Image (cartoon, rainbow, N blue to C red; front, side, top):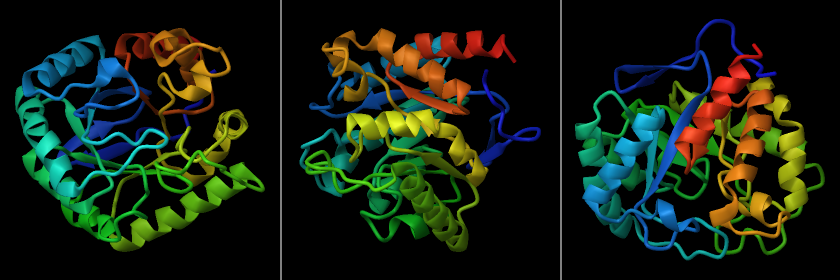
Length: 282
């Protein structure tokens, strides 16, 4: 059964707008890239991105997460300037068109985070936890927005070459203890943690993390899970990302049972339905 890890409500301050996490919510993914791993999430034009955001919001998305570069295994990094060119007008238009929705910027560049928040984003989602850009943590503190801190081993280009852990659960937990402390000392008020499924982890590592997901409750931070259509689902099923919706729903349901507060997904309706059904058991 879904485990509410908080006494009462957790309220995040998103540029003066309260995001209440008294039950699980859905984050919809929009990739302003030509090469993200799931083709249907690629929306490089402003209007098509707005239309996808409208569809996701209608299906129950609370947050729209917009990213300007792929971080799939083996991917090459692009510059902050190119990322800004890809995302800022999309962030601006979605924030303006849907003022009640929370817009998140998916970036590990401090300069992109600043531009996006100025354009209307109110959450920063960083796959590197502030490790790839040493200016990121201070930038988010000054922006006064919630920060999604993810765990990754290595960098996207090589992270899946040979990821090794002695004890993945304890190592990822220790990482978050350290990064949360760094965020706190910098002045970041609201931190969300993301275990980083698929980022520098083997299939066995991913499922070991999932099995022990409740352990992260010790951090007393909201927990985001992003497993949508990833290889940890379609590879053992010997299928493709395009055919991984059912598996995604299964794993999202398990994550909810183990304390996930935010599901980051390509398919909002199905994630929302999983939440609704799990809540009937509470």
